[in-house]
Amino acid sequence: MLRKKDKLPADVHSVDFELEYGKATIEVHKDSINEKDSILIVDDLIATGGTAHAAAKLVEISKGKVAGFIFVINLFDLNGSDSLIKKGYQVENLIEFPGH
Image (cartoon, rainbow, N blue to C red; front, side, top):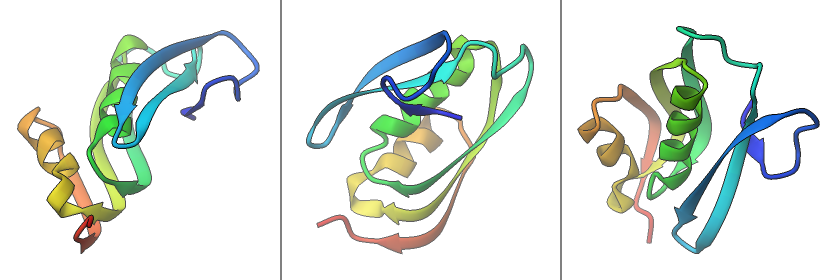
């Protein structure tokens, strides 16, 4: 499970990233992803992709592989899904809305 900074009780890997409205940090327990695990990242919303890119980085720091991303809502004109696809990730979006 990936969580906001200081929400997990054990030793963690951390990644700082930019949001469209500021900065944030997400973390994962160091022992929650094993080497060569294939991880599907599921989130409710993708906007600019900052959180998604940080999540992928945490998986890769943990020696796992990102199997893909699924988002319920894609704010398509903010290009977050497109930026993940350009990096070679598989992405599925259930609903598309403009982000403005």
